[in-house]
Amino acid sequence: MNDLLLDVIEAGKTFVRGGLLSRETIVAVNKVSFQLAVGRPEILAIIGESGSGKTTLARMILNMEAPTSGRLLLGGIDLAAISDSASRLAFMHKVQPIFQNPFESFNPLKRVERYLLMTRRRFSGVAGERATAAAVDAALHKVGLSLNEVGGRYPHELSGGQLQRIAIARALLAEPKLIVADEPVSMIDASLRTSIVNLFRTLRDDLGISIIYVTHDLATAYYISDRIMIMQKGSVVESGDARTVLKAPQHPYTRLLREAVLLPEVPNAKTNRTPSMNGLISPGPPERRA
Ligand SMILES: Nc1ncnc2c1ncn2[C@@H]1O[C@H](COP(=O)(O)OP(=O)(O)OP(=O)(O)O)[C@@H](O)[C@H]1O
Image (tube, rainbow, N blue to C red; front, side, top):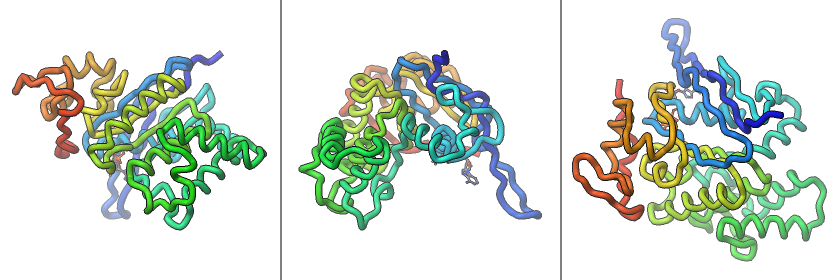
C-alpha cells in the first residue's frame, strides 16, 4: 500500500531559450523533493521571489509541464505514465488547480453555471439533471455561494472574489484529494483575501483536502499553512513547519523575506510589533536579485 498522496523526487525543469547564437539554459526547478501523506491533509505553502520556480513546480505537479529530471508520483503513479483520457480524468479527480486570475479561468461568453454543470457531468458520469444541479449547489454552498445566487450570471457580472470562489467550487466538484492554488488571492481585492484563505483551511479541515499554496505572500502563508517551502533560483533553500521556519529562519534568504513583512504573533525584529491578521502587511514580491 502506498501511503503517499504526492511524492516529488528530485524533480527538475530546465528551459532552453533563444536560437543557435544566443542559447540560454534556465534551470527553473532544481532537484526538488517533498511528499504529502495520504490521510493527513495539510496546507503546504511554496514561497519565493519572482522567477524562483514556484509556478513551474506547480505546473509539474498539475502534470501541465513534464520534468526534465526526477519524477513526480501521485498515489504511486508516475505522472509521466498518464497518457490516455481515462488516466487523465482519474488524475483530475485527485488533483485540481486554482489559478491566479479567476477571470481567465472562465470564458466571458458563457454563463458560469454552465461550467459547473459540465464539470459535474464530466466527473460523475451520467447523472440526472436534478442530481447534477444539486451537486453544483452543494459545492457552491461549501464556498459560501449558491446556484440561486450565481445562476444566469456571466463572469463579468461577478466580483473577482466571487469568481475565485466559483473556481474553487468547480475544483470541489471533482472531489479532489489535492488542490494546487497558484497565487490564488493576488488578484483579489485585499478585503476579500482573508475569506478566501480561510476557505482553504475549511477545505483542509472539513473535506480533508491537501492544498499546495503558491505565493509571494509570507503573511497569508504564515496565517494558513502547516508547512512551508522556501524557493530561491529553482532550489528549496529551507522547509519545515511554518511557524518554526518563520519564527527562527535559518537561511539568509528566508531571513530577508521574514524581515520584509509583519507576521501575526511573531514580533518583527526591527519594530517589535505583533499585528493581527487584519494588520498583515504584504509588501508584494521581493525584488529579484541577480
Ligand atoms: N515556458 C518557459 N520557457 C522559458 N523559460 C521559462 C518558462 N517558464 C518559466 N520560465 C523561466 O523559469 C524561471 C522560473 O519561472 P516560474 O514562473 O516558475 O517562477 P515563479 O517563482 O513562479 O515566478 P512568479 O512568482 O513571477 O510567477 C524563470 O526564469 C522563468 O523565466
